[in-house]
Image 1 (cartoon, rainbow, N blue to C red):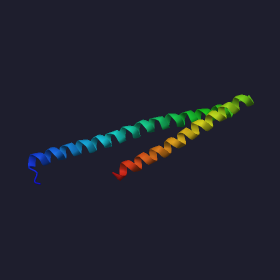
Image 2 (image 1 turned 180 degrees about the vertical axis):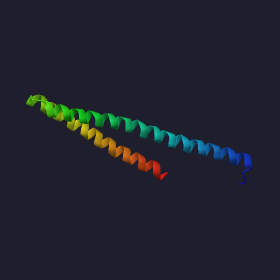
Image 3 (image 1 turned 90 degrees about the vertical axis):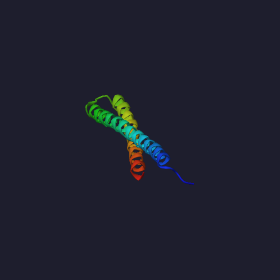
Image 4 (image 1 turned 60 degrees about the horizontal axis):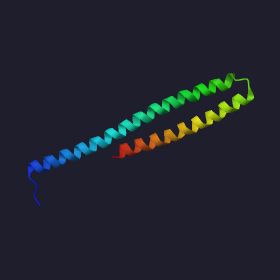
Length: 91
């Protein structure tokens, strides 16, 4: 089966637009996740500061629980971002 030049160009153009769209989507996901991770890091730091100055034991315990949650969310996000970047670089 022979393809004429116009059909080849058309197919290549579609393929490039598809690949570019996929790469752009990966980049947007990367940027969005990076922003969320920065916010979580900031919140984690703020919670540590609050814990350091908190006098009430119950309040400190609640803050520590919240810190654990934020830390685990951030850890999962970092793993996801790492996976996302590896998937993007392998293509």
